[in-house]
Length: 328
Picture 1 (spheres, rainbow, N blue to C red):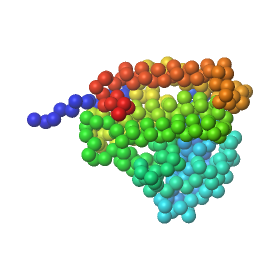
Picture 2: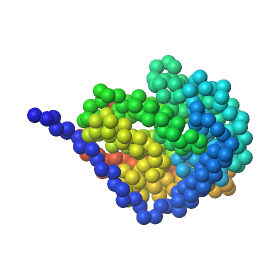
Picture 3: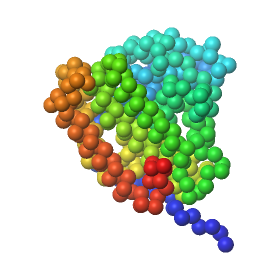
Picture 4: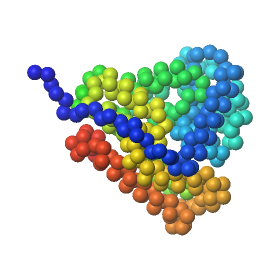
């Protein structure tokens, strides 16, 4: 007799909210316009298919505003490192955004694909490598050479979902890495706070509560949606969902049930978009955690967590493997 899977694949809810909250809609439009301009500028000046240019951060999440910086890096094979046009890319992109990226910095570097795709876990997987890998996977857009970006992306997914993953399971290796990344940045933030090295403390705290949590949740639900598929289907489902910006991913999976969470997220984005509010927040340090403006946003962050938990419970029944994966 054929074995009948206990877990059936979910169908994503394609019914998205009719109207996005105002700030999210504005930021998505701003992001789309600037991503298009950057792609066109790079295409006009760069030649060759040995590398690609990608962007993470607020542009990668399609949440950028004129307050956003640009977190980009180049990806290619180690053997082609000397061919990478670092400064040319930096000059082109630096002329197109308010906050010019620092050439040679953590996000304006050449990242070997071998390091990005294959170095998962153990001593060689440093914080920098983990950060680039998870951001590439969870909040990344291409700026130059989309086919190469997709090839590296699918190669990475294949490393998370091997041929021996069962149909009833989820992409648990990915879940564990997403959890590890989120917990690592949380621990690092706490240590930097204690040592007085957390610059712009309040905005960074709020990003941990909102944008990093959205990133984390977006990875969790993508993995959860792989239940019931064989390894080929799991890879395809991950590729489908992880190519979407986190907000769109949330809408795609949960439909209009995601609106309450998105409204809270929208309020957070609108506060950081406002230069005057952002400047006030940047002056708040860890010794003034009860500042009224900050306290209101942190309370919203707690409600944002509750809304995400409700979405998880509503979509995935108690026997779904995502719950066990998150617990142990």
